[in-house]
Image (cartoon, rainbow, N blue to C red):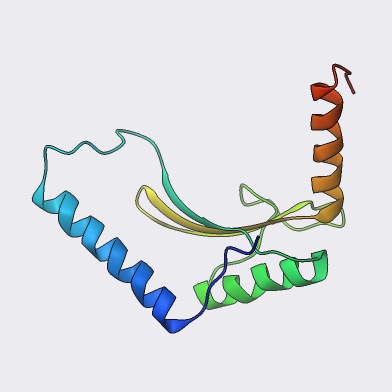
Length: 119
């Protein structure tokens, strides 16, 4: 599944929805918001590693932020998670790509756990 939609009409609809949500919450101070939790909009690029990683770099460039391996760590040959993030106070916009090998390894561990095995 690809989370990325660059069509103008879909983008406009999402931005209008965010504006409407902000207006709704500003007008209703009795509606609670998270006290300390981070609110995150997260995009997961789809496709093989070359495509997904390139998409993280493309979006990071558009955002004006670096790509890291998470928590600000630099990219290395062992990187499995590619992220680009920008924060606006407690609200964060992130893009994340997880390599195919890591996803396969994770799925295998989950299957072994579900089957009652440990690894």
